[in-house]
Length: 174
Image (cartoon, rainbow, N blue to C red):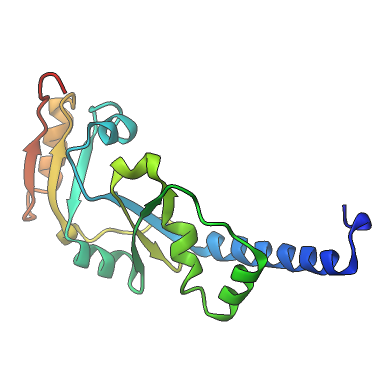
């Protein structure tokens, strides 16, 4: 594909390839923990809790961030009509500026069609399984179809912690 390009276009192409490789490396290293601000979104229960058979965990965000990721960054997802255009010129500037603008843009922007999720992301500098401090858990919301024995297992596992338990209810005609 580069054979039909001018020298200027070929240089721009090579720069874009270098930038894409850089960002692939950055993202490969990162860990992303996605949360929602609201427990009352029915679509979220359908998407992420096996159609109400699961549960939702409420966290103390400060304790969670400290225990889970240490030097993590927090991002409220920004919902937009048009996803920002990524160009070699704004990507290249960002490499020199230590990722401060580009990470929130790339990891924290979604289409308005997802705004019902009210998503919040915690991004760590490392990926992989993390241990969550049980003290960060403040509440458990049981789905309307969750099996009673599963609820009891969760209650038993968290009996020595200051955790509140809630049962979600179906609101007729919603």
